[in-house]
Amino acid sequence: MEVPPIITCHVLAVPYPARGHINALMNLCKLLIAKNKEILVTYVVTEEWAGFIGSEPRPANIRLATIPNVIASELTRSADHLGFMEDVMTKMEAPLEQLLDRLEPPPTIIVYDTFLFWVVGVGNRRSIPVASFWTMAASVFSVLHHHHLLEQKGHYPVNLSEMGEYRVNYIPGVSPTRLADLPLNDGSKRTHRIMELSKKGIECVSKAQYILLSSMYELEPEAIDVLKAKLSLPIYNVGPTIPHYNLGQHKTTINTNHSYLNWLDHQPNNSVLYISQGSFFSVSSAQIEEIAFGLRESGVRFLWIARQEASRLKEICGGDKGLVLGWCDQWKVLNHPAIGGFWTHCGWNSTKEGVFGGVPFLTLPIIMDQGLDSKMIVEDWKVGWRVKEDVRIDSLVRKDEIVKLLNKFMDLENDQVRDMRKRVKEYQHSCQREIAHGRSFQDINSFVREITKIVMK
Ligand SMILES: *[C@@H]1O[C@H](CO)[C@@H](O)[C@H](O)[C@H]1NC(C)=O
Ligand SMILES: *[C@@H]1O[C@H](CO)[C@@H](O)[C@H](O)[C@H]1NC(C)=O
Ligand SMILES: *[C@@H]1O[C@H](CO)[C@@H](O)[C@H](O)[C@H]1NC(C)=O
Ligand SMILES: *[C@@H]1O[C@H](CO)[C@@H](O)[C@H](O)[C@H]1NC(C)=O
Image 1: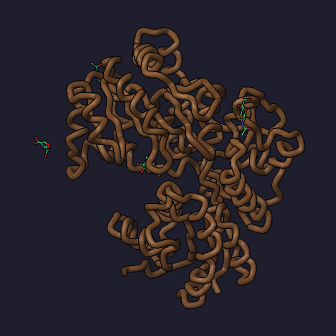
Image 2 (image 1 turned 90 degrees about the vertical axis):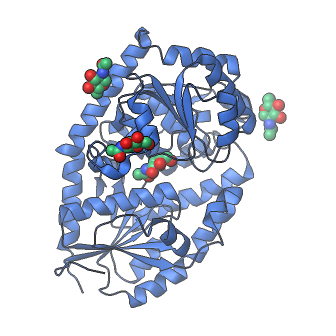
Image 3 (image 1 turned 180 degrees about the horizontal axis):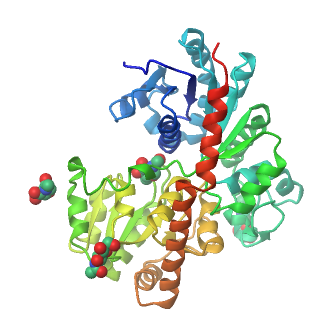
């Protein structure tokens, strides 16, 4: 592979082996290279992921290095998410060490996903500086960093049916939040263990040299200020790490002639609801069915991304008002003028893409950080509504409620909706300014200056 003749900095990038994490860190690496062509990135993925992303276009100075798969097929990990996470924490370290033993040139810095706490030890032992890259909201970082407060007050874990509505107001940088919206607070053994592992990632950050946040100051000023004040290592808020720099190519690139984009071209502005519940965790099939029948009855135009259930949903929804697909280019879709709303599970990546697309939200979070992202959308930024108000985990939102919600949400004449649209456009513009020349722009430049100063051995 062709590598630039002058290398002043060699970044070893170690993502958590899951799609959202891999994309986010890859986008960060592309951004670093766009800033300085003398940076070389070695991007470490398992063999299975190398197969998935190997053919995707990337700059010559990002090269892939592979380590053995953590489990036979990482795509099936949703069946046993916790087991997969445990394997990631124990089986990746030795092969990474072996890779480091033979890597030429040796890396000058390691940028790793905060969840992979053991990478900090690897870097420390070899005297290689490490930067911890946090792929979720800064507010979620603050919740995990201050988690002992929740435990002291008996607010973790809780029975959400009884306590879900209760609001905590003592997490620094986070506005009052229902217990139901906090991460992994359902009281089950499984989520408790996931919380333990997540907190370990946060604790180990103190032994790293830098923290990189993938957020926007415009979205979470208090949380970012709190972290910058409380943690004793430099924090760079490197921006959304979504492919915003690719925007504007839709009309000029020929190979993006997807039939769904053509379909969208023929729909009125702001008339289509884009629905994606994420690729990994899913809501119950009973709930999906209520949504599908509600969608049909509402008569709202839609583009629905659904993996396994696509054909059944097509049957229920009929073909005249919308499309059900297994995949789409979400970023292009969200930026299409026909899209008038985004029904989302509130993964942080999707949350940021929705804000940058300037589209109001309907939120249906499932697990992890999604509840807190939903709360920020609905209560802090006021750019969306919850699909489900009930805090009980297993309660269903019925078809009739969904019809009412959809008809109101997609009504461009409704005053509440008009205000919400206006606000999300304001956030869109302030976030765009932030990456064009504001705080994120400055932070990423400072980080690039900092890492290119490190002397190569
Ligand atoms: C964000 O999530 C969507 C939907 O899961 C996916 O299509 C897209 O590739 C993701 N983008 C990034 C930058 O991870
Ligand atoms: C949670 O609270 C509800 C309502 O009081 C109760 O029915 C349920 O059994 C409780 N769940 C657990 C696991 O204790
Ligand atoms: C794009 O695809 C549609 C059918 O899917 C076709 O009719 C059209 O000619 C294509 N346009 C270009 C520019 O290739
Ligand atoms: C639809 O939106 C596009 C892009 O914002 C704009 O150029 C066009 O004029 C709009 N069409 C109508 C009918 O308002």
